[in-house]
Each structure stands twice: as structure tokens, then as C-alpha cells.
Length: 104
Length: 404
Image 1: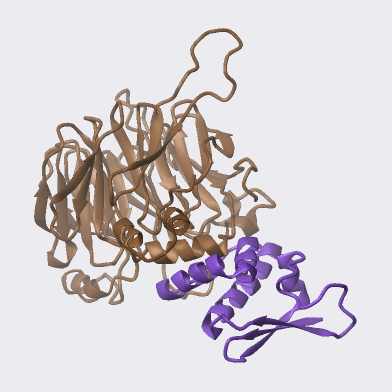
Image 2 (image 1 turned 120 degrees about the vertical axis):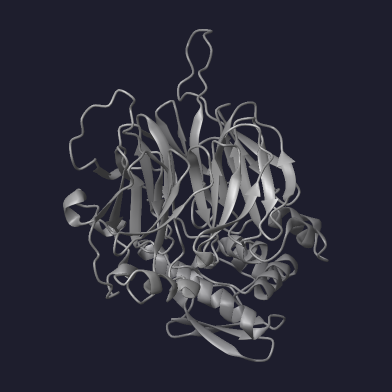
């Protein structure tokens, strides 16, 4: 089960649904209510998000999922200062990204 | 372990050989330290001896069930030689300890020129601060004494290497001065920092290497520039001797601990007091007798910057979360003197008056994405630079840690 997220330049990233469950009923993110049908891919648009920022958010999801199940030896998650500022600003102005980052 | 769970004792190390009782009581563990890469642990185990043990500890020291938690898998694959315990006999009481960051590129060939037994690869250095003011510089892997630094007139209570690996060492002494030494130039003393009126108990360099904090008996905390070695500001607020200080990993916060029973958290760039953490007894008395408050001995930040550990005279190790006013966890420990976090998180080491060290489980927490962004920005920007950014006020408050 997968979710496809699309960034501002049409760049597509496919994430496993279990990772997206971290977001908990984030309606803004998922295009349409209801349960997923088996093998269905839901599309979600983050057309305002630059691809490198979206990649960083997705990398964080993967990092979080990995270390939630195994918390020994947590490695550092590095973010460049420019990206950090962009992410915080984007989180401030985009409701959907704000909810994602708040739930991280 | 989640936040809120009590620290559990993982292991305890005791001094190896029996010593004759010395009424002057020289058996204290005044300092404990991990090397910045987490591969060694050092403790001044009293009676003039420093013990160096490779980390993670050998399994014989660890109770069953805890092995996984105390291991750092990073070390297993490195093929370094001589990963054996070392004992350094310093000849006098050891008060301060500090490891250099490793590897330290500039010195790679420096030591080998003078000591043929020193490995021709980069060295891990340990500096030890002694009772009469001397500082002995050791190479960790071989246990060789490299240098003797003279200059201080009294106990060298604390030492700190610059985190950049430039082999600049700062020492803090009861002779009321701090001194800057350049180990690239055979330990040449390059500066004396005067100004304190009483014993200097502690020194700490900010992770971005821009600031030096010193804490002293006359209740003041000084901030010095590590570029010009001049005084930037004095932080007033404590009511008694200030005995411990530490910067947050992003250099944005400074904590200081005092015999006045409080820990104060400061913004080192503006000098503002952000909060005070009071150390009161766990259960206040039923009657009207005074709540006992307890002198602090040591405070340190966790490596991800979300927790503090404190050791106080009321026989408690306390864990504090950054944004809360009361501790999130306690563990009983008697006669505690010092504490430090393992650099990769998960373990706290403490030292006591009887020369023992203990290792405790520490909260393992995954930083939120917001906190990681804040840390990334603050490692790079001063408070004033943040305030000058064209961003909303709430975001400035978050980035400057004013959102308590």
C-alpha cells in the first residue's frame, strides 16, 4: 500500500502507507476520505514544496519509523541550515506541511 | 527508555587496587569524561590515578539484559590496536580531565617526532589537571606522557579542548585564572585570562568554538571570546559559588549550576536568564519545617540537546527535559560529584566521593523535525542573527528557545 506525493516540479515520491500513518488522519494530505482500496495509490500534492525539502521530510519519516522500532544507537539526522529555515518557514505557511512537521 | 522512566544503573566501576586509608581523603572521582567519538571513558579514580577504559565496557561489567543498551556498534568495526584498559599514575590528586576530539589532524606527525613509541597515526589526547597546578598531557592508546604544562599556581580544577580539534586547551584553576595552551606548539601558554576573584571551578567551550564559559566561587559566570581571548560579559544571578557549566550542542544555551541549589539556563549571546531549575527534596515535609534544598555539583546537556542531567548533594541524579520546570526522572546516588553523557546518547556516567563511577540509562529520544531544524540553524546563527531574520515572531521565539 503506497502513497504518492508530488512536489512543485512534478517530482514524485512514493512512500509506504505505514510511514504515512504517522500523520494520523491528516485529511489535508490525502486526496479524499475513506479507506484505501487494496493496491490503490492515493495522490497528494505539495506543489508549493521544493523537491529537496520534500525529500528531507520523507527522509525524516523513514528515520523516525526506523528508530521508533529500534531505539538503540540513534544516529544523527543532519539538516543544512538553509534547508532547516526553509522547512520551518514552509511549515508555518502551509497547513498540510505544518501538520506533518507537528506530527513528526 | 522513554522520558519519565527512572535512570537504571547499568554498571558500576570501583577502584581496582586497595589503597591505604588516607585521612586527607584523596579518593574522590572529581571528573569523568568520554572521548568525543565515544570510544574511551576516563575517570580520576582517586589516589592520583586516572583509569582509561575502552567503550563499550566489557561484558563482565554489565548486568544481563543491558548489553544492547550500552553498546555502540560504531566502535566494533574499527581496527585500532591496544583497546585495553590503561592506568595513568599522575603522582598527585587529579581534579580535571579532558579528551581531545579525535582524530586531530594537525598533530599527526608532531608527537611521533619526539616519542618514537607514539603511533604515527593521529593521537587521542587526554589532559589531566593536577593538585599543584601542573597539567599532564597523555596519549591515550599508548598511555605515554607527552607533555607537562606549568603555569598555574594552584589546583587545575577543569579542562576543555576546543571541539574543532585545533588542539587548543583551556584550563581553569583555583589560582583564579584560566589559561590557554597550544598543544601544536609543545604546550605553549598563549594567554592568561584573569578577572575572577575566587577559585575557578569549571570551564566549557561552546560547540561552535566561539565562546568560553568559566564559573567561579564569587558567584559569577564569565563569557570569553575564543577568538580574541577577551571578556565578553559577566552573568550575574547565582547566590553562591558556581561550580559547573555546559553549553547546549547548538551553542544556543548555557546552563550553570551552583551551591545555591539552582541551575540557571542562559542565552549566552544576550546574557538573558531564561529559567531557573530548583533542586528541592522529593517529598516536601508534612509539617512546617523547611524544604531542604540542595547544593549542585554538576550539570550537563544531553547530546541531542533536549535533556539535562544534574548531580546534587541531596543524593539524587535528576534528569530534566528542556521545557519543563520539574525533573522528569530521579535516581538515588550517594556522594555524587560529576556527571557526563555518552556522546551518542543513552548513557550517563557519574563519579562519586569514594572513587566509584556509575553508568545509568538516559532518556533515548528521537528529536522532532522542528527541533532538528532549530539545532541546525542555531549551530550556525547567533541569537541576534535569528532576531534579524524576516520571519514571524513565534518562529523567532521558538528558535531562540523562549517558548517555555
